[in-house]
Image (cartoon, rainbow over all chains, first blue to last red; front, side, top):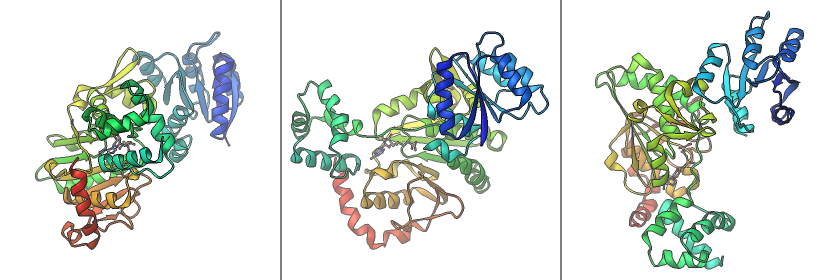
Amino acid sequence: MKTCLVVDDSSVVRKIARRILEGLEFEVTEAEDGSKALEICKRQLPDAVLLDWNMPVMDGFEFMGHMRRLPGGDQPKVVFCTTENNVAHIAQALSGGANEYIMKPFDKDIIADKFAEVGLIPVGQAMV
Amino acid sequence: MTPTEYEYLRKFLKDNSGLDLSADKQYLIESRLLPLARKAGLSGIAELVQKLQAGSRQLITDVVEAMTTNETFFFRDKVPFDHFRDTIMPEVIKARAGKRSVRIWCAAGSTGQEPYSLAMCLKEMGAALTGWRVEIIATDLSQEVLEKAKAGVYSQFEVQRGLPIQMLVKYFKQTGETWQINPELRAMIQHRQLNLLHDFSQFGTFDVIFCRNVLIYFDQDTKINIFNRLARQIEPDGFLVLGAAETVVGLTDTFRPIPDRRGLYKPNDPRAAVAKPVLAGAAPRMAVMAGR
Ligand SMILES: C[S@@+](CC[C@H](N)C(=O)[O-])C[C@H]1O[C@@H](n2cnc3c(N)ncnc32)[C@H](O)[C@@H]1O
């Protein structure tokens, strides 16, 4: 089973994301900010990170920078999931090492499409 | 809705758009046509049917369009676009190296995601097509979706279905909450209104025809008839691409599936098809349909 770390300061968003990801057969862990997420990653890197941008303590972009520098930190697929929906932010995320980018609000279809796009789930699964 | 009204609408839709509704789709008609009737100031389906019978032109168009399913995404199903890049275009580029021109037809392009996905694929091929004349013609029955396709403006939701984020950044411009595809890609596509039930020989012949997720709505005779006419608009070495739930197998031998390339078909000799008895039944039916 693939693992996905959901990083978002809203417990509601984390809950919705968890339900969708478990439906796509991911084992889900949650973190409420970048620094908590980094602690989890230091213990064990997930296959995927669904990552909010604006969070207290450490934001998503900074977290990604730290995580990418961990041993094996280039492996997880990072999918941003944020209300920051302008080209400048998207470009910054991509050049900082993000694999995909979701602009909130999101739903199951968008998550499935984006996860299929980066090879986390087979393309067919995105269609059901 | 009375059974007579339902039967009238069923036949009306079959004649006007090919839509083949089974006997139990009353709910579908009601959910799509009641709002339309209200908007037109009509009391309900009964009055709508009366107006249609009286031949109200605008209403005929509105009803036909309201009953179409326009759902589509960028790079829908992904695989056909991989085939387009890895199988179709390399072969076309070799075969047309002399003329350096390629003609592509998107036969039910809906709101434009499919033709624009093809345009992006072609752009990504870069130098391989430098100096080539590339023509993409996108047609649809519905004027409403054509307008949207022409504008190339999509909601945040739409650009997140099937479109890789790099492509969004590269080929779209953001205006507020919406995203518009770049003028350069828009200029690659000609949008034309076309009912597939009607003659389409005026569009000439194509190297590639995408005809996806539209024939599923039609009955067998209509499918066969359209396949046979598509065969006349395709170059002998061209490609036909169908949707995931569509096939020519068992319907016509004007096309044959390409092994290991799901959804891809090659034309057989079109002259052979004309002699096929299967066309004899379908041909007069077309004459009736074309009389819309
Ligand atoms: C489900 S969409 C498919 C769009 C796209 N090809 C795809 O696969 O995503 C079907 C389209 O076929 C169009 N259509 C339905 N009947 C048609 C007809 N008789 N002639 C031409 N287009 C038709 C509808 O307007 C609609 O936009």
